[in-house]
Length: 197
Image 1 (cartoon, helix red, strand yellow):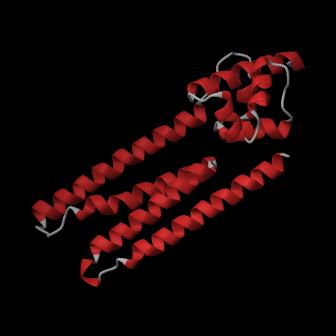
Image 2 (cartoon, helix red, strand yellow):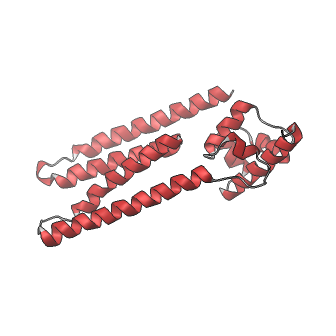
Image 3 (cartoon, one colour):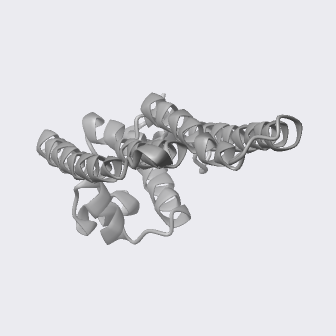
């Protein structure tokens, strides 16, 4: 069983390492977490150990567990982060491969006009996978970004897929949804700050 001082030291080393690997200043990390740069400095010096709720919030921010933050081996396990990156890159490769396969079939075998649309229609598929993964690992900023990209790519698909119907107003709807997503993001940010205080 680890002593309090050992936990403080491990957390201090790990939080500093995480911040530096993300190329963030103490001020930037403090802003992202809703704390002052002085608080981050105290954590990194090992002067203060945050409460359990804050530890959990910090762990979620870095896509880690609390145990990862306080472990004694001096390096933080990036298992979750690497896993989501691997899945996202794998799904991107799969979507590109399938889009090329569909393009080849439509263009050379079926001789369809506008076969290039297979690449455009691949975008919503990819952003759907990214959205699902971000929802599983709960990173609200990434969820908002992937939702926005999914919305715009769907609008683009309908617009290009049905040019004869002149669906330009889909971009107006997408713009309104984008403002809604930004509003939701601000509400979540304020709610998280109040929850910590």
